Length: 369
Image 1 (cartoon, rainbow, N blue to C red):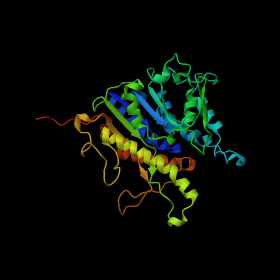
Image 2 (image 1 turned 45 degrees about the horizontal axis):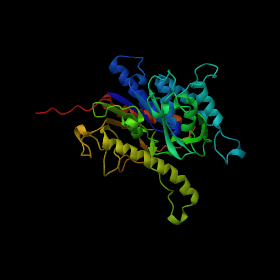
Image 3 (image 1 turned 60 degrees about the vertical axis):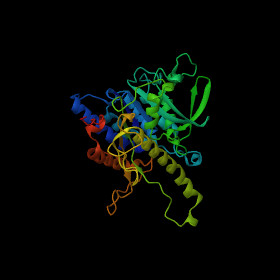
Image 4 (image 1 turned 30 degrees about the horizontal axis):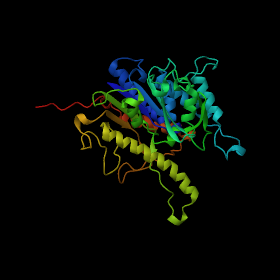
């Protein structure tokens, strides 16, 4: 069985993701009696968008979750350094602080003179980083798989020769927050922005497609017993316009609403497609009509027609879980550093209540008469 771990974008809310990953790591360590197990020992491909790409890259370097969490808590405040007031009409934060962090931690040497490349042997599992090419206007999923078309070492623009820190900077270049990142692929020069500005802020489905469609070079087999996908979000909320009469809604209200709403809708759609194509072991209800599309419910594909096994971990905040119950209010802005402890606590509680070892394996087929 091949295993894929998919990690959403969401800024500092990546600390929520890490609580779920810590629970998965602990369960697998206990089951396999391997106290030093890391998730790169279990997952054959780790895909990430934006903050998810940062976590994915650290995981591919065999970092335990506790160490990645320490880095988030220690360096998170420094990665959101505001631009001087006279530059904030261009972007909110300085990119050099983020770039410095990436260069330090994704380098082949202590002096940071030899950047770690996407094709580095130190990456112990397959890695997929999502970004948007703002020059060509297309999503760019970049992987370190040696058989991928653009990973041919004879190409002057081989993806494997690009510094990993550059790809992470590109994947996290959230528009208005950070400047775009220029990345050179051979003689070609492109500007990139955050992978969240693609349909793949939740990269689960594109990871499955890359792993199984022959043009991408992986050519892994599919099926419930052959492929397992664990998808982890950063927490989310229902995006809505301000509570005003229609005539009072301003252009700024709509600008603040439109982009988050589109990102949220695309992420939900990716989740829904994974539940339709795969055997959903766990996931919150998508809506009141569809429910959770788990294996117990009728779907477009049934039984052996399911192409993979799937579990989705994510929590929706700022809505009441049930009618008449209190909602958990939480500021979900992706740069809200002060709320990191709250995201952390919410993630721990969610992981303890929902993550189970049985979600990490295929559903037992019913016995035949």
